[in-house]
Length: 119
Image 1 (cartoon, rainbow, N blue to C red):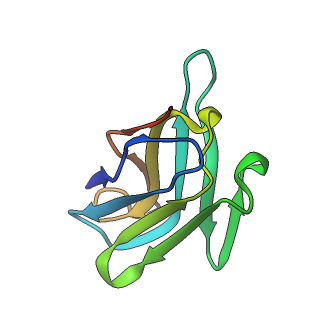
Image 2 (cartoon, rainbow, N blue to C red):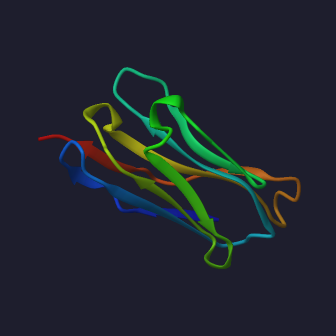
């Protein structure tokens, strides 16, 4: 299984970015999907995730970030608006996937994509 992220980059404060994460490989079912971020000096934190029909968000991004998924494309997205400098970090997508090797589910991570919010 591979998770390939795209969409990161440099943006000014107040700007917007949309991240994408496409899953491919041996996939029987995809369960929880989400986005985490890593900033210097802090532990990796959950930014947003979808479990079933429910989406949950880190308090500091509520109202600014939206997570969505396209099941037909095995792709998830993170739309980010009103970005500020505290949103700077490496964003990782995360999936829990079942397949022939892990029929009860296994956690997979993308390689990470850098988001830098700076003027």
